[in-house]
Amino acid sequence: MNDNVYSSEEKADRGFLNAGYTSVLSGLENNISDEAMQSLNNNEENVDPSKSTILYVDDNKELVDKISAYLSEKYNVLVASNGKIGIEMAIQFQPDVIISDIIMPFKDGFELCSDLKNDVNTSHIPIILLTARGDSESQFRGIEIGADHFFPKPFNINLLDLTIKNLIESRETLRQLFLNNPYHNPKEITTNSRDAEFLEKLLKYVDEHIDNPDLNINSLAQTFAMSRSTFLRKIKAITGTTGKDFVDSIRLKKAAHLLISSDMNISEVAYTIGHSNPQYFSKWFKAFYKVSPSEYILQHKK
Image (cartoon, rainbow, N blue to C red; front, side, top):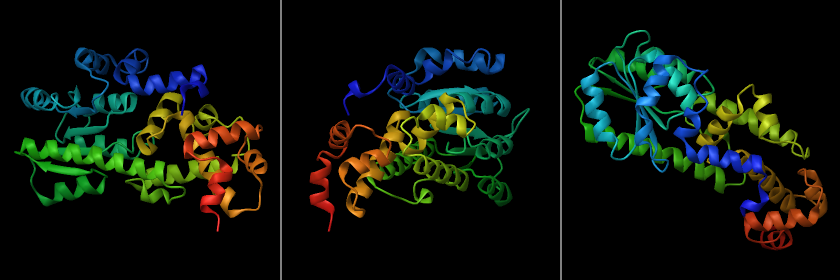
């Protein structure tokens, strides 16, 4: 859709999400500990907005240096020296994948994984646990608390790299499923029960208030008791959409559904989904579906 349809605030949202690390860094000083801030500052210079970002949490500096050097060819790599700092950085920065050792001071990898997977702000982030413990009990506990993968040490770095790649690609597949399908079960596009519950409640709320033209990302973030920035990143991670795009996509899918499943005319559909200008609605609909509402009806209505 043409950028002209976005307000300055909405363009700022898109810029915020695209800019990645530097946008987050500028607002963190009063929100995270000095240790976590130092960890972020140490990684600032080598950030590429076009790359996915890995947060690597481990107190073994030698291993951190080796793995970071290897992965930094493909990813932005942020590091934290213990689970406490790792949790702070995960919450504030929302990396694409987290790799964490298990045995660490302050908070171990199990605690980090449990805390992040039980927090709706971070439950969508894939977590890979690394440990010298190769016993099945440790592996079972890691999977039980929500770890996406478990690597006993020593491990093959190429296999770790491939696992990261597959995790990122699988999330992208789920996002495309959301974007390209009219209606879906939240469980089909999420990887855990907490995210499925969050998305189900969110879609239900939007559907119930879809006729309100003032429904927007600000009101949604407030309703779900999340900061605007965290909500934007959560929605982007699960659905692949920015703030306005998310609300628009739900309105458009609802409109398409009503056009072929009800006896409403185009103006009535526009009002039902919160648009007071049917003419603008038709242009907006065509920009998304590549056909006008009337053409869409002819193509799909039986």
